[in-house]
Length: 203
Image 1 (cartoon, rainbow, N blue to C red):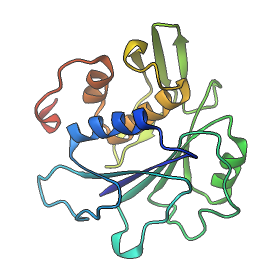
Image 2: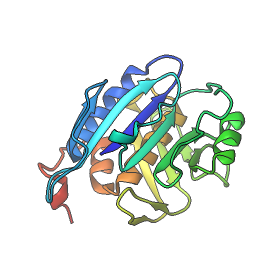
Image 3: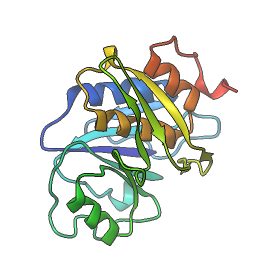
Image 4: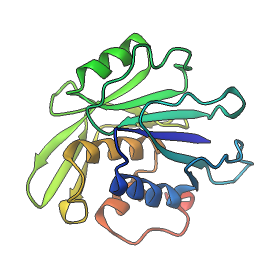
């Protein structure tokens, strides 16, 4: 199971709906507090747990997922040592590069961090931005949940479908999509193209 926590002061309905729709294409999705089965049998689709939280929620030891992603949805501030005791080997944080206080805490916790911003130093940035479209650029290779490598690339996004999301949240969503390694379904989802019936059969 892969646990995705959207961290923010208030739930972002459009972002959560968008995440649920995309991850439903790739596997089983659980939202809220329902406890899913942890393991996926051979040839089963992966299981994603998506939830909103005001603060990062450390997984319980008896339900520890194979990976936990904390996506910081706004410029929230964290309590001291919020990640004390977290497993750095399976925790990934996606954060706005302008949120320097959270970036510092993530660095102190030695967690894998994916900063999204407008600098050449950020993992994801914008190559272009107009009223009608964005081009998100993955500037350095990412390692997926499965251990594969996603090479730098550009991801075009038509803004007509995503007016309610900030540029940062669109970059953060692209980071999540890249972590799955399912680039073709991600591109099709963002463009509004018809999805394949089973992404696992894509070449």
